[in-house]
Every structure is written in C-alpha cells, then in structure tokens.
Length: 150
Image: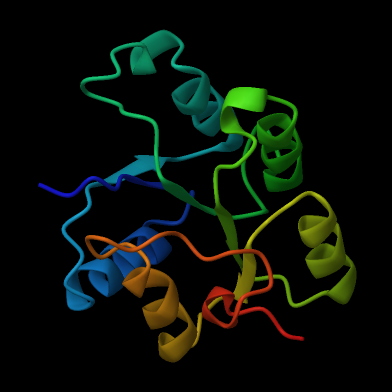
C-alpha cells in the first residue's frame, strides 16, 4: 500500500481517465480520489459532509487541481487551502486547459508547485508522478521536477 494519496479535482470525465491512466502507467500505486467540483474539493480537504471519515477519505499528499470548476473556481480552492495552516504545505499541481500567462502567474502567487496545461506533456506529468513513488517527496516549488517554466 502506498503512503501517498492523490486528490484529483476535475469535472471532466475524459481528463479524470487521462490522469488515472498516467498514474497507472507510471507504476504509482497511490489511490486517486476524485472531487468533481470546487466545493467537493473543499469538503474533502476539510473532512466535512460525505468526506468526514478519514479512513475512507484520507488527506492527500498531492492535489491535481483544474481551474475551471463548477460551484467554486480552482483559484478559490487554492486560496482556501493556503489559508489553512494544516494544509498550507500541501503540494498542489494546477492541471488546466488555460495557457493564459495571467492564470499561471495567479496560480503561482497562490502557491501551486506546478502549472501544467492540458493535455499535459507526458514527460512533465511523468516527472510529477515519479515523486509519488515510495521513498520520494513531492516536488518543491520551482524545482525541475515541477514542470514549471523558468
């Protein structure tokens, strides 16, 4: 059993399939939990409502976050996470269709560790997946493994 848990915050079924497949292809055994909108992500991370049982819904070790989400926008989820000390160090990778520089800048200002535009290039996603192998740590902000541009 992996010590890692992945939370994927994504409303598009095709993108959920893509990331789950990438995790499997990378040999990652970490379970992938899916939140379908921004409010579900906040509920999951706060352990409220249907996500109250941490044995079924453990805190993730990494979050893949889409920006364009129903109910609560991805930026608002990211800002919410960074306001909570218990989650402040949680690595969040923005995985979005937006190639807008202003979105990348805002996500970085809010503390994402990487910003990948869908479809994410396999090498960048593979580097991120490697950090989930046993004995490894999530990428540091701005590290070569993060997939960020310098």
